[in-house]
Length: 306
Ligand SMILES: NC(=O)c1ccc[n+]([C@@H]2O[C@H](COP(=O)([O-])OP(=O)(O)OC[C@H]3O[C@@H](n4cnc5c(N)ncnc54)[C@H](OP(=O)(O)O)[C@@H]3O)[C@@H](O)[C@H]2O)c1
Image (cartoon, rainbow, N blue to C red):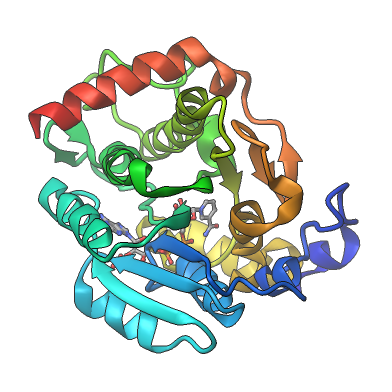
């Protein structure tokens, strides 16, 4: 446990920076529940898969390839895990995943949109959209909207965002340049994809209003995972030095998304941004519901043409 985790106090939820996914589910059985976790083969997704299954849930774990998903799912104990392919940058793979989940007859108690890529050094595109925005936002939009009719009546959608959403452009999401053709910065593009995760949760909240289904976004903390593979060596070295001081472990990093997906204390809470297992404050533009609507329409238009 890092020095910071020892020093920080828990918040109003009773959990905080140092809490783990096991802590936030302690003493509760998730038997009979079904959760889908994207990016289940690595980092926070793998830990979320492990703990949800440990508590007795059926977890549908998705990864870029079915082989990766099956290996991850074979590692769990407790509940049941089903591995599926879901390459978020490939709409046919996402649509096949949606079909497989629906075909399996599952009623989903939660969808944890956890998979992501960060800080690609050079601009890359998928279907004319910057690749981080496409993978982290558009791919998950396609998945969640495809599964919405199969979300339980009190089901929860959890978007794994990041405090790095603060690096997004001033307008939040530059809807006039989703390809980042005018200029490209690795962190601004990542930030844009992560603020899109929060805005998607806001837009979904509006669509789910009047029922018990919810959508929220989370910042998991800073954790040394494979996510840092595109970071420059200096930043990676800095993280390695800082790890015992201020980084979370994967067990702690998975806590907020597992908390928001499962904890009774979060029932009915929607459109919020969580950090350290408590409601937190995102950048002001992340609460711009007009922007959330315009992003929703722009994403629908992308999805319609791919
Ligand atoms: N680690 C942190 O400090 C931190 C901080 C803030 C937010 N986050 C967020 O937390 C989430 C999980 O990240 P992590 O730290 O656990 O990183 P990770 O260990 O790199 O895991 C990311 C997962 O996403 C998958 N993925 C990447 N591109 C994909 C695609 N095109 N289609 C489907 N799956 C894809 C990866 O698959 P492969 O293994 O096959 O590449 C992997 O399973 C991400 O959304 C990230 O933005 C992390």
